[in-house]
Every structure is written in C-alpha cells, then in structure tokens.
Image (cartoon, rainbow, N blue to C red):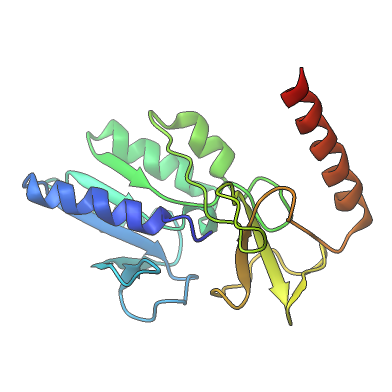
Length: 196
C-alpha cells in the first residue's frame, strides 16, 4: 500500500523493453481504480495491460513469443493464479508479479503466501507510515469516514488514498478487541526481541 509495488513492476518492465524482451501485462478486472486498460502507479507512470476476470483467462492471451509476463494486484486473483503462474514458468516465461501480502485485517491476502513460497525472488517494499512518518509502513490501514474499519467490513473494497493509508505496526488500528490485544502483545515481543 503506497510502497511503490506497481512502480517497481513498471520499472522492471521498462528495463525488459530496453533489453528487447516481449512483455505482456495483466491486471484483475476487479481493480477499477484505473478505468483504462492499463496499470498505473500513484506517481502517474503507466503501462498498457489486459484486464482479466480470473486467473485462467491470462493463459488465453499468452503467445509463444511472449517472454515476460507481468501481473499486478496478485492478491485479487482467485486460487487458479498459482497454477497459471506455474504453467507460465514451466513454459519458459518469466513472471513478475506485484501484490499485497496482508489484507487490512493483518491476515495473509488471498494466494499471496503460496505465491511467495514458489517465488525465486521476493522484494518486500515498505511505505512511509501516514500517521507517525516511520519508514516502516508495512500495514494497510482501511479508513471508513476517517475511522479505522471494523474487522467485519468486506475484505475487498477498491479505493485510493481516501480509503487506505500505510501504517507502521505501532500506528495500525482496527476496530476489534482481539486485534488490539494482539497488537499490544506483538509490540511487547518486538521490544523484548530488540532488548535481548
């Protein structure tokens, strides 16, 4: 969330184009923040992309000469994305993906844990905490009318900076007693770890 995932994906694609590689870019149709058939970073960089309803549909667009397949917002795809990516790799395609590892409840997001297990390389990016300015904004804070969202709100709500902001672990909040207790315990563990 606001850590530059899409921008990093676009940077890698620009390098691939310079190297003369044939690329193809995909994004879930579910992501409606960008209306055109493209992916776009928060700083305005963009690339044409095919919007697909589900993971399996990606395979319908792959040609033999495609070399690099880029997939943005991996967390929004169904479980088939794992088989699709493994099929692409088995067919000699390089796959570069970007996605959130945790949802707004601090829980693994969709198939991201499995995808991270299969990845040859993982770059974990962090944002700036929008509350305290820490460089370790590793949580996605969902806000509804400026207030942290309730744990029972829908898992997926497409939105921009007015709905989501990056937070560090200490500033992250959610309206649920269990998460508040859990956060306090995690903060103490972190302090104990640092002190040992």
